[in-house]
Length: 216
Length: 187
Image (cartoon, rainbow over all chains, first blue to last red; front, side, top):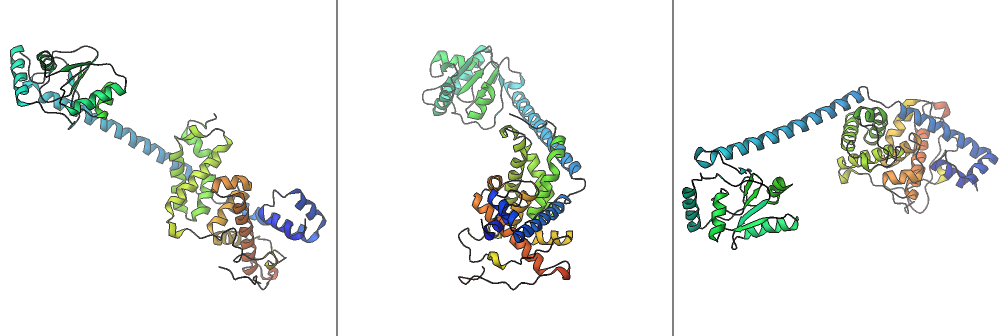
């Protein structure tokens, strides 16, 4: 190795010289002097960086992390509180002031749904009065997943696609049949389809988020 | 898989000072450096599952901090480096003074370091202070080993030139007329 190559190796990394460079430096006084100079310069650089510091840094970092955790906890609590208040408001607004017998309505704002045809809605109202069921109230409870649909309801198809794709077994009632309409009325239906019953929870309309919330 | 302590305080105690040193010499601003360290540690706090060895944690944090810093630098402000193939702007080996005055004055060292272009300064700091090899540096800064070696070489050349032109002690000054290659001048 010649002086130029040895010098290049020193400039790149004086602490990790290739064997040839080290051997050359041992035999060349000029390169040895330059190598020593670079070791001293690197030592001065090291000291300069080492003295770069910021007083109180650790304390401020820990404080920042605690504040961040506190903000996250507060946001989570606030979100949970709003959801509970929303559900309570919806429940109180249904059933002519009467609490639902079963089937707690889960509150999701503005879920896509199909409105009942006027004739169907009228029939539901008749059945409700005949059975003594208050508006929004339900006499259906228990386990399992039930959904109330109609063949012409595109949103109902989306809901069933969701249930099938997630491997969720369910019973379906067609509100266009008398038996299905009676079951829909008993379940507290009346303000649209699909109506989903999951245990004691009811969801009117469909969105993936809403179904995720009640089914998972 | 090795994970650091579950306590954020332990993380800060182990890495904050070194991260700050690197951050300061990246941006040369005390407040921005502290913000970078804070952002890096808070973001990394929940991401240690991907780090598989304790000795890789520091390199991972340095890489994360560097990425955070680059987010703050507008593309137009990033310094343009000479390409590896473009040697016209570089000083020839023979142009440097053969007598290299020792940088005893810490102020001179600090000034010389601050005057270096950032890409040269950061690889020099990572090598000299953190002890990384050119291979490890290449992984941290996202460049080839050859590019990193070139930056280190130019960084040390630039330091030597600054010291020669701005000596702390006049008695040690060596004034050498600079010669340029005939193919082209510096850019």
